[in-house]
Every structure is written in C-alpha cells, then in structure tokens.
Image (cartoon, rainbow, N blue to C red):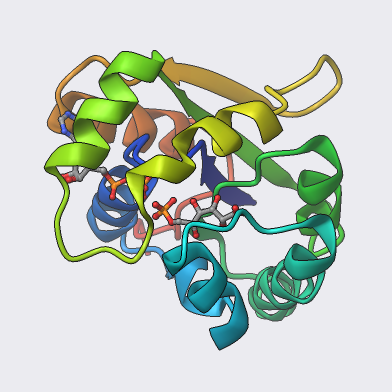
Amino acid sequence: MHFVVMGVSGSGKSTVARQAAERLGLPFSEADGFHPAENIAKMSAGVPLTDEDRRPWLAALADWIAEHERRAEPTVMACSALRRRYRDVLRTGAPDVRFIHLHGSREVLARRLADRSGHFMPPALLDSQLATLEPLEGGEDGVTLDISSAAEVLVERVVGIIGARPGSVPDSSG
Ligand SMILES: Nc1ncnc2c1ncn2[C@@H]1O[C@H](COP(=O)(O)OP(=O)(O)O)[C@@H](O)[C@H]1O
Ligand SMILES: O=C(O)[C@H](O)[C@@H](O)[C@H](O)[C@H](O)COP(=O)(O)O
C-alpha cells in the first residue's frame, strides 16, 4: 500500500506527510526533490509548469513507488498530484496507491505561503495551482482533509488513515 499526501503548494503536504511517515517508520519521499533543475528554475521564476514539464517528474515518482512495491515496502509521498491524469501516472507504480488530499481555502493557503521562508515556490503561483487542481473524483481511492486544523492534528489523522489499512505498516508483532 502506498500513500500520497496531495494538494496545492502551501497545503502542508511536506510537513504532514513527513511527520506521519516518521511516526510510522515508513519510507518517505518529497516529490519536490524529483523535479529536474529546469522545472525548479521555471517555478522559481514564477512560471507554472505544463503537463509536458511534469511528465518526466511523474514518471520518476511512479518509479520510486514501483521500486518499493517490488520490495513489498509501503511508502508515504508528499506530491501535489494536482490533476487526475497525474494521479493516474502515480497509480502505475503499484496496484494500491491511495491519496490523502489536504484541502483548504485560498485565504489560508495564501497566508501559509506568505509565512513560509526558504522555499523556491513563489506564493504568486498559488492561483495557477488552484486552477490546475482537480479534486479526487469518485472511483479514486482517497480521502480529503481540511487543512484548517493544527499540523499535529493532521499528522494524527494521517497516521490513523494509514495505520487503518491492512498491510500498510510493517508488522512489528514478530
Ligand atoms: N496545519 C498547519 N497549520 C499551520 N501551519 C502549517 C500547517 N501545515 C503546514 N503549515 C506551514 O505552512 C507552510 C506550508 O507547508 P508545507 O508543508 O511546506 O506545504 P506544501 O508542502 O504543501 O507546499 C509551512 O511554513 C508549514 O510550516
Ligand atoms: O506540479 C507542480 O506544479 C509542482 O509540483 C507544484 O505543485 C509543487 O507544489 C511545487 O513543486 C512546489 O512545492 P510545494 O508544493 O512544496 O510548495
């Protein structure tokens, strides 16, 4: 079982997914680290990515999931996964890829981005992120959480969601 914490920039994916993975002792990947340098340069300059820009990035992320699937290791990833077709690429990595969408108002997102420092993503790209976002559709395995709660509360909820899935956490009963 593989979990992708998704949502637009500033929704808290990295913060929440990283801590949930740590708590559960699961391999974690931050999708930002898989972007080719050209994509980072583009976003840093305030230019939104195109589907074409995202293609190799999504393929590399699906490979990461597949590599862990071959070793029967459940994983947690923080990845925007904004559109249905991007999630479809991630789903090619393993038979069970589940999404946890961190959803919030533009106001909360803009505030969090304005307060965040040391990140390449300019807050000005929030509107394009929101325009690109396609929320989870019927038939997609996933849940949506409201980001207005404190990060610790969201981590707890994500740990609960992941832990509730049989086989999603390594069996420590011996
Ligand atoms: N639930 C939360 N409540 C308050 N601040 C949060 C919460 N989740 C994340 N943050 C803060 O909001 C900013 C964006 O979070 P981040 O994890 O970087 O989002 P993303 O990875 O989705 O872009 C960071 O400064 C982070 O510390
Ligand atoms: O597909 C995209 O447009 C990007 O992946 C984007 O959604 C992602 O949000 C950036 O990489 C910024 O990173 P943060 O989400 O961590 O701000």
